[in-house]
Structure formats: structure tokens, C-alpha cells
Length: 147
Image (cartoon, rainbow, N blue to C red; front, side, top):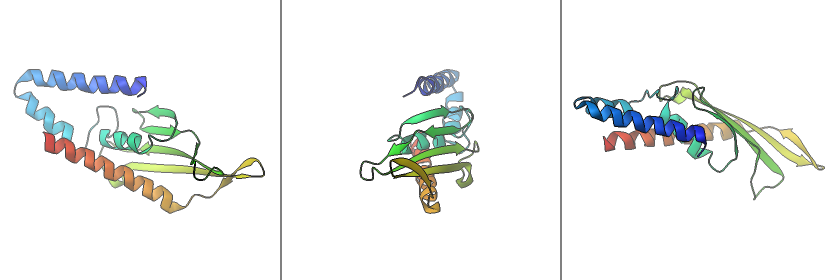
């Protein structure tokens, strides 16, 4: 967990703690947390967490929760050492919607000792977006059922 992510998690925990101090406000906070529109960190929290979870196997270069951008470093699949991928995930909205997450992928293949750009299948990007959206919805459902 990066220090920025830790600070964000700490801030969310403090908000939850303070919200519980107001008696009748606690129930309001619980429903706000489970809402599809969660903007404590500037973008949809469920999409953010789902994106980080989806990409946890890849080395991260940059994470900006306020701007909603995650950039990975090159990842080489051990089963395909002559191919590598780099991803950028952008959260575009504070609402949990299908068009609120965009994945951009770069792919390179090893050719004569050099990495050469190669095409990325559109289905690869679509599958990653679907995985993120599914995880985000599951996170939201888990929050709603707990509250």
C-alpha cells in the first residue's frame, strides 16, 4: 500500500469515525458510503479500489486518486516472456457507471533483442474494463449489505 493510499484510507476512517459521533448522522453516513456516487477521494471509490485490486499483480508507476489515474510499469507474463504490457486506467466520473472507467493498453513484443510496439486486441481492453466494473459493483453490494 502506498503512503498516499494509506493516507486516503486513514482519512476515510476518520470521516467514518466522526460521522458516528452525531447520533442520527450515523445512519445517513452509512447510506452515503454505499451510494453509487462516492467522491471522498475525488472519483468513485469503488472503481478506484476495483482498479487497484485488478492491477495488483503489475508494478505501479503512478497512482493519483484525485485525478483517477493509475499507470503501471511494463509487465512481462512469465508464460510469455517475449511479450509485455503496460496499462493506464482512468476513472472518469464520480458515479459508478459503465462509461466511468477507461483502460488504455500498450503491448510490445521482443523482436531481435528489441521491444517493438504491437497491436492490442480491443477485446483485451474491454475485458479489463468489465473486470473492474464487476469488482466495483461487488464492492458496492458488499458495502450495502453490511450497512
